[in-house]
Image (tube, rainbow, N blue to C red; front, side, top):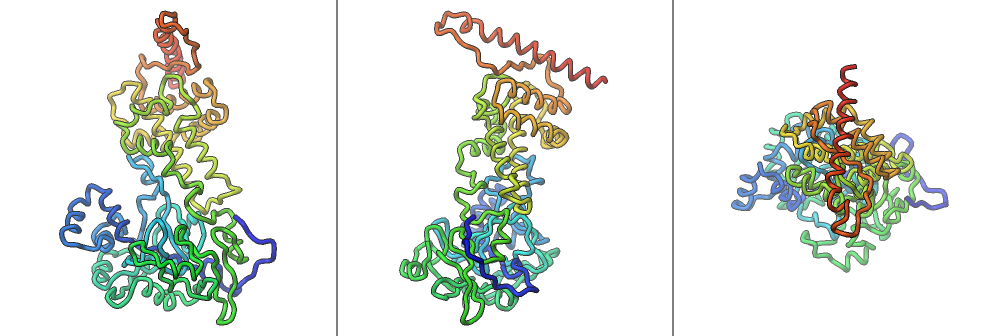
Length: 475
């Protein structure tokens, strides 16, 4: 995070916190709602109805599903890491995106001018604030909307939504989309319900929330963008100011991450300021994490197909390419307290990721063991939760040293956790991962007998391990 050397200005009265002056706004875009519905097979009938009747997907997903917006006001429930840890799912985008004190402007990733639904929630009510920029604040994990929150919806669905959301503590407000855009409705609500919220302006003293830079279909008004110093590709104004009074403005930020306001600088300590792209949580395009996603979502098919990047019981591995080793390095990055405080949610997400990698390695052991017992969510949870610290420490050693011996030790640790729940078969083979030099000739000894020798070594190793485990149980 960058900041100036000169003393930063302050614009906040003593009785108010910085977090109380920031109202986070997130809108429900029709395309995003449709993507959510089509990803859930149980919503196939609703998807067909939307197509046949021309319904608004964002209204349908809010009004008629429980998972997208729950009765108690919980949003992004699929980002509840503890609840989803042992399911056949994988979260590679762990956050929701919000803007400050107004509706987001269009960028290369999307356009929200035609959206009809928005959530408004004070920054002070959130845990898990990972990235904190006015053009894109990312909250990690699920969130239960507070009593200070507002859900803004079209008049047509407001009453039904109030009847459904029986445990929601906030307020559901409505507007008429025929006479007002969502941007205009949000601006009105901010002034009425959150009078102490900052008014953000650009270098021209134009109120940012009132600026429309696109048509709702990603067709930009280039003249408006240029005149207002708006970067339509990245989605930010190059400078943000707070209107302190009619005649005074105080600089808040030089985009993407140069913080100018004193209170803002203090709040961002231990947090990311900037774009999602290239940040530590930006993993969805990484090939290795794509593989971890595949083995997590489709284990029956993908675990056997990806044994080369899983620990397994046996076989030589390129340790630096193991999914668990790669994930552990990301774990270290996300739990670095010098960069990210626990209030960011990165620590929770890091634990979620490394446990997903451990699950994949335990499943690879299960496949090679030949066990016919289904490896259920409950069994996996018992294997990992009761042994997590030991497994993590063994993975740390493997990641740091990347030696054949540390791989064998890591496998032993996995097997001990596995055997506490499911006994391994006596004939299971664990070959030492140390590389064996092969003869260049196809008639050489190792090419003709190497597999048998390694099987023999493996049988001795596993026999010793199982005997030791059996004796320890008796003691």
